Image (tube, rainbow, N blue to C red; front, side, top):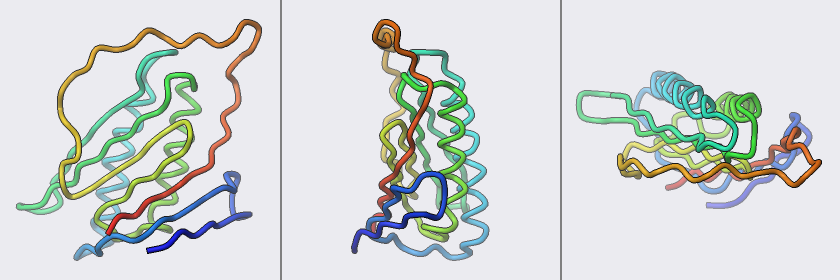
Length: 153
């Protein structure tokens, strides 16, 4: 296990990978399922309005006996478009950093993406909190995406 910092390769230069996870059988099929599942979750999470919780979970069957569990979340202060753009950027990087890995935790300051072959969340509904107001005269218009990806063993 280790931390790797990769810089200068895209528009989000502060990119970290921590550790590794187990390889799955049929990694190409698994990677397609991950991308499809987290894209759907990202679209759902980004659909929240200003100040609303931007959060979604998705499950998909990898085999008759194995499921994929995914969770994505953006902070309520970023726009729908910023949320979706950042999550889609992360999804595009998954095959590069973590292709064929059975569990990944991917963190940015403004969003979170995780998938695993084990369920790691409750399906309990929590009431939404009130919207966060930006300071007077200041717009929240630019999101700086940097990441810490944790590929768990």
